[in-house]
Length: 507
Image 1 (cartoon, rainbow, N blue to C red):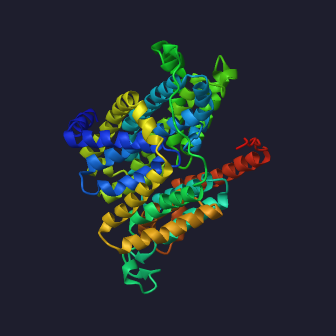
Image 2: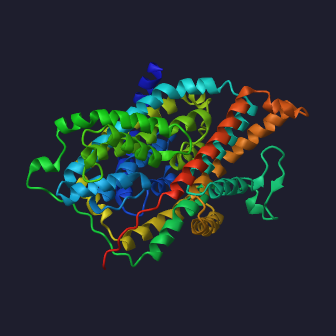
Image 3: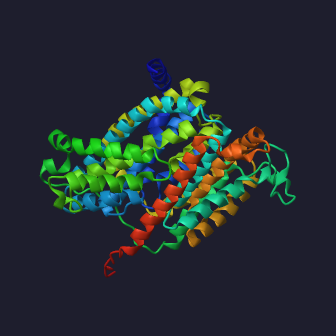
């Protein structure tokens, strides 16, 4: 393994990958800091631009966008109390309280240092455990993989969103659209309705952009009368209030380690995501803190707990994706699509078929953390100014990139029609409460389910009891039932807790 890591660093320390990482970090922080644009949108927009470069350059750039975008969301959360994602809600509580006290620099510094620390620790875990897990998963046959994939569908569908039925329906809808086109096993056409252009199925990139990006543009148009917030860093006359000292970082390092461990563990479980990790780590940090009363009122330790756990999910969510072909969250599903586009099929064999590429990507993870630390620390003012651009400058550019990316995917005007159709579908899904990210996961995983299911039927023949002969089958059935039951129980308890009513401020 050590030799593979060294060769990975040798491959990543070249001009092309380094420039890709720098570009990814800058784009990720900028997009993440803009209220209304998430890192998942940034990755969807940037994905078509990686088609014409080496996989090491393209995928490391997308990973840099991912990592930097997660951190960038904390900038708007701290400065204007507008979290770009649910995971930044806790950062907004403590960070904005420090901003109002003139300590925005301290809050931004702690957010950055905790983010980088959490990401690096999770990346080290990824490097150490991914290959051994893949070696174990090679022992699983098609029957075990069928139940594993059904378990993944159940977990992701039941844990996503507020409604379990809507989450499962979103997943099933993605599976349905993935079946359009020619059957890879029998060669028969399915759901094409006599349209020859659908024989090859839906092109992934325009479908992805239509589902995830364009509905957000429509939402911004609908909210065009909402006042625009200017981001600004408040400076205190006391220099100590504008930065984090080594002593302050040392005091919260124990919290960062513990929260990073929580985030790493949560990220490795499919479907839970960064929000769950941030809330659990924040609660645990508050429980063990010497000053729990400061949490929510401007606690540097609170920011460290939430951000380190939130960002640790970035690395560990890749563990199930690379070893078992199961994305840990919605962003991992997008990255899985990027791997497939570049000819890399996630799963246990990837460590044997593309060893140098995978370890170069692992090395890129660590290099990205260093560039994120340096670029974000030296460019706070630039990123704040970019994030303060008005919506009517930003979202027309997003729309142009979206249509250009959709066309670039296959150099085909039919892909523009696919983009428009899925934009309508994606916006409609949001209106009725369906989850677009779960739709994408269902779309990506269905071909793997079909392939393994066909192989499993060939193995069992007429004796269907063989499906349940393996103990792994019963383990995954039990885990699926447990996750559905536990998520129903958690959501039932949450529904009984009255939500706080926010006071409306006079305009």
